[in-house]
Length: 460
Ligand SMILES: Cc1cc2nc3c(=O)[nH]c(=O)nc-3n(C[C@H](O)[C@H](O)[C@H](O)COP(=O)(O)OP(=O)(O)OC[C@H]3O[C@@H](n4cnc5c(N)ncnc54)[C@H](O)[C@@H]3O)c2cc1C
Image 1 (spheres, rainbow, N blue to C red):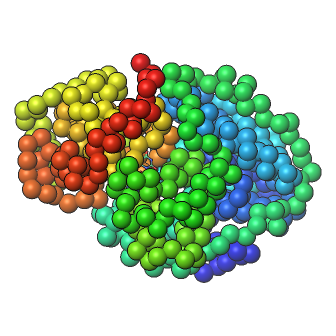
Image 2: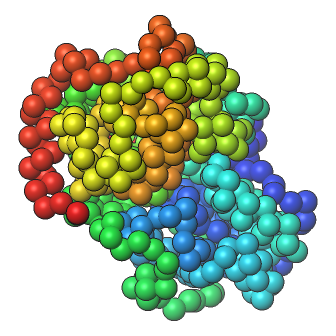
Image 3: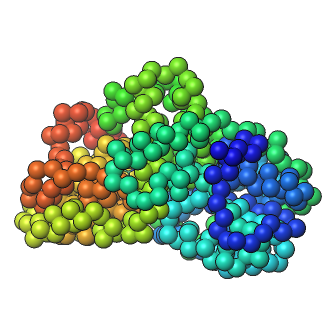
């Protein structure tokens, strides 16, 4: 292992073959929108110090991003504004480039005579395409640092893994090297000689081509400080109930960290490291690490190695076959995407989950499985079901447009990372779930009445 000042060099890879040049070092902040505990920022700081060059952070803002509505931009901008302040206090200016990143980034690199670019890592196709284009055009070195995963995605496995059981031993073997504490970011940075005017986030918001009907939510505060606070209170008060109660949506036994993790406002490694150093009992620690580390990084693995991650076509062959064999089966109910969206099904439990998604931007993990499986059961085709589930999840869930979301839908509807079960109508061999199964696990009426109370004022 090559560890340089606390940074394992295997976290970084080159996206082109050019050399570091004399000129400012740029950290292209994208998926990891935080100041603390950010390996990409730390790597850029170290480069800036080695080369005696100033460091700048750049965020590229496309006019639209995979249909993200106002709700998501609101959450993201508030978090970015906080990161901007922290960076500025450390002498690192932040600039936002508005437009197509494939053009704005190379343009900026050229005009500013940038010496090298460091980006963070995302397995999503669009972001990879932006980076490929920018790296090809950059006249300087272009690095990618996986600041999102505990084990860098390309190192965890060289191929698409079948299931948690196949990636778990690989991740476990690398865990000791990578599940480490973080150094302080400022320790690496020189005071920057550059300055940039403060970002006008309100003005940027007005430039976006975004759907304002999906309103911001008030139940969760964005940003690094709020993320850290949420994590601390989960660790202090709730994690000891995680193993027994995480599948009970009434129990309040989950962390609620996914929007923060999605926008990179908190580091999964920081959370996992602190959990592993805490006094939490082994069963709760194991259950939490299984989700935060193994399942989450399995999702990145799928999206990284399977470009069809957001479509029915990406599903395992056995699952597509069984679903197509049952595509013509009689369905007791068939709903349109609009009926699903407006929570107008016959099923109060399903409607409650959908209302929670629409009104709060959040939906409990256990209910998410039920929610997606019923979309399969009540859609005209399995392909339509896949698209509707992705559309609703990405449109309303604060943690949407995430590898976890594509994998969650693919697991529920298309057997990804699962195995064939006994065959039944519509589902074929895909694992089945029904309301009586939910009733055995938790108080369904209580869930319905809580969600209905939360959604007293509906969007429609
Ligand atoms: C249909 C469907 C859609 C989903 N869409 C998303 C999504 O858009 N974004 C998203 O982050 N997660 C998604 N998930 C996965 C999971 O439901 C959420 O990560 C979890 O419910 C978030 O709540 P939490 O932060 O309280 O989780 P906790 O139970 O506290 O877990 C901690 C963290 O572990 C990770 N995690 C937990 N469960 C899973 C899982 N099953 N797979 C992968 N990682 C997991 C998440 O990062 C989560 O924040 C989806 C699951 C399904 C079945």
